[in-house]
Image 1 (cartoon, rainbow, N blue to C red):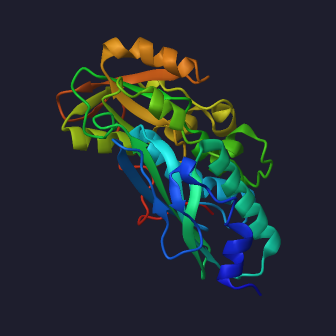
Image 2 (image 1 turned 45 degrees about the vertical axis):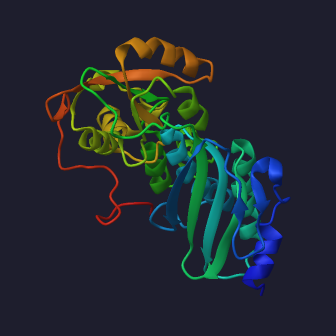
Image 3 (image 1 turned 90 degrees about the vertical axis):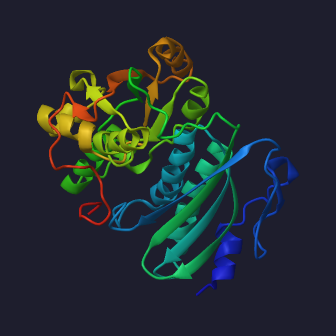
Length: 319
């Protein structure tokens, strides 16, 4: 059985980042010492992923590692921040599961490399499987995309397609285990839209990542901005294969209420819509208008039931 220090050394001490990565002291001391870029604001967010709540207990280890980092990075994307560093706190049921831990670490490190995020510290302990990831990024002053900037008349638009995360979870519950299935891939390997957040600086007035469902996350923007919204559900871009997998009615529900999409919902002035679409097209991603911001509070255009998307203390979650 390995100690936590041996596990950290073996699996979570990659090639040490250096001064060019903004790290003057990395893994292995009581604290890490970071050097933020002069003139930038530091954006920090934390998410915890718990087995059986945020992901299935039998999910592939590499997917668990990827997903734990991706959901935190998605918050940086929504803020328009460039990812720089991360910390990870890992709680394991046992300390000697080498194959599982090796695959978990591989999934985590691969996404670190793909997004330019340096793992600079953390903790390993014993208990029920959970992963806490703190991410840190940078954004220029006055360019952060917050939830409070939406104004009446702004266009509401979403990146990519919706409902894929909820569709993938539904298929998993049915017994689908083909990791290459498009919907299952969207659920197990979400992609944080970091490049999109950077591309929308100076265009979008407000943004949020769609992790708890479109309507639930839209509600956060409306509350923070003191506005309402008129939605056009017929324009909602649903994930490919979602209607075939769930049926049209459930597919629309997944697009409106399903979580785990990690696309971005943005509010931007109408005159910025075309340029925003061009910038995202250069990244190979669509930007679809799904409504407008209104002065009157509330949401119109869809039947808003008691369903409020993912909420941690009201049940649901992964099987």
